[in-house]
Image 1 (tube, protein in one colour):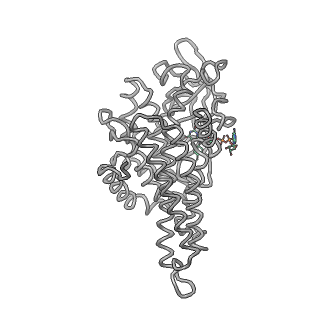
Image 2 (tube, helix red, strand yellow):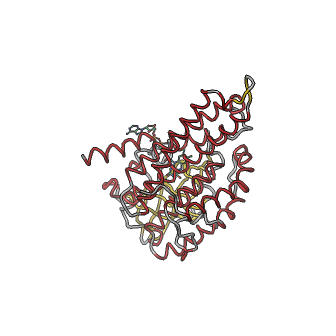
Image 3 (cartoon, helix red, strand yellow):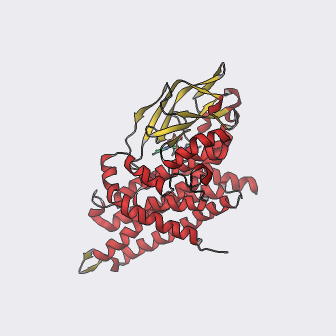
Length: 381
Ligand SMILES: Cc1cc2nc3c(=O)[nH]c(=O)nc-3n(C[C@H](O)[C@H](O)[C@H](O)COP(=O)(O)OP(=O)(O)OC[C@H]3O[C@@H](n4cnc5c(N)ncnc54)[C@H](O)[C@@H]3O)c2cc1C
């Protein structure tokens, strides 16, 4: 058993950390306050390979593995959860769906533009009436001549208004339920497709989250992604890998908050000594360190299994469940260690706490992860 990251992965971590310290950390507080998606950082993310992490070099990507994907998301999250959500969802969901199930023409058309940042990817599964029960979607695509006509509404879609395209899941054979859903790629600007509402949020405030409307949106067969009626089955695979990235995102937020809490506890003096000298503070630091180390092991193991081509669905859910809840606890402790200052917008830890909460909800809530894990366990014993 080898617990060391490879040299390549360690170098990647250093490179992304340096970039984030220089380019992201100084601005993240303003982006959050302004609740504005920072378009200006997109070309820099692309230059570093962060928008085509797993896209093969032949399509302009960095051609790296799932472990690299997890490390990149973790490092961005240490300083900015919102930007990490962009990196995670762009790579894992919209682009990841095309990478896994697109035909050659679709890969040629979309992947180079995704890797260069010219087109950010959105991915629409959730609807106003269906979240955890994603198969209960109402969006439909009906056949009209040689085209498909998509009608419906998608909810909480990341990159909803800034995406260059959206992979959207729609019912194509309602009577077949989960086996009657198809994925389509819809380009921004297609008549009838628009971001109908921008959503204001507790955290992840500079990530773009929208309600999307599809009103008589016409697409050809060339925009069908994967096989007709297999979209939901394919989606389960996309979500499995996505969960590794949300686990990594949570890990980064937790580790970022912990590092700040440790530094602050050494500087802040009360009763004539640094608060780090008090056992109550030491125990909070010990608990967060231990829980985040456990979260890292679960997350990297899930990524490693994925890279070995082995089943990783249960492991991805366990990693996401544990890492997201551990991150919320670690960020909450970090605010506590900062006292009143931790409750102000001047210190990063309150933003990390608000951002971490999303990790318990997005890409399947903690309750859904517990359902996935227990189903695996109960069906294998
Ligand atoms: C910031 C943000 C970004 C997002 N980005 C995207 C995106 O890019 N694309 C996309 O498609 N979606 C996206 N989502 C949607 C996200 O995946 C859903 O919010 C999530 O899956 C939960 O669905 P819901 O909000 O409808 O909650 P619901 O499903 O209504 O759940 C409400 C509560 O009931 C619980 N619950 C539901 N069913 C059960 C059950 N069977 N047993 C026990 N408890 C249950 C849930 O755990 C939760 O606590 C995003 C959400 C947010 C907030």
